[in-house]
Length: 129
Image 1 (cartoon, rainbow, N blue to C red):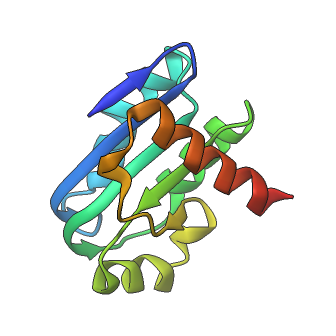
Image 2 (image 1 turned 60 degrees about the horizontal axis):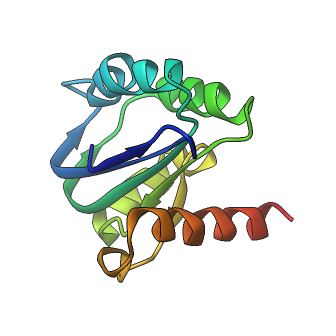
Image 3 (image 1 turned 90 degrees about the vertical axis):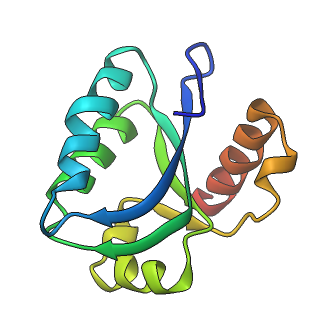
């Protein structure tokens, strides 16, 4: 977790290495050990930095769907920034992008956390309208 703002209800989390739902069930561990406690603290908007996900191995989408349902009830969302093409292909191929918005925003590091949140939030609001 790079940053969390409990007043604005958002967190920025960066992923590094392999994301393996097929064998290690990484999304279940993420959901149960990190996301669920954050949701209890009022966080309902998640910016996931995915530029360093080297490999993505999918399983089913139930934890992504659960996460999506948990946060959208309160007007929240989940966005993944800058996922590498090969990982994005696998992510889209398994239709997980129904629950996680995939956004290209290479200059994210030049923004403060609050400004990054504003940019991503505005992008998602425009998409919804």
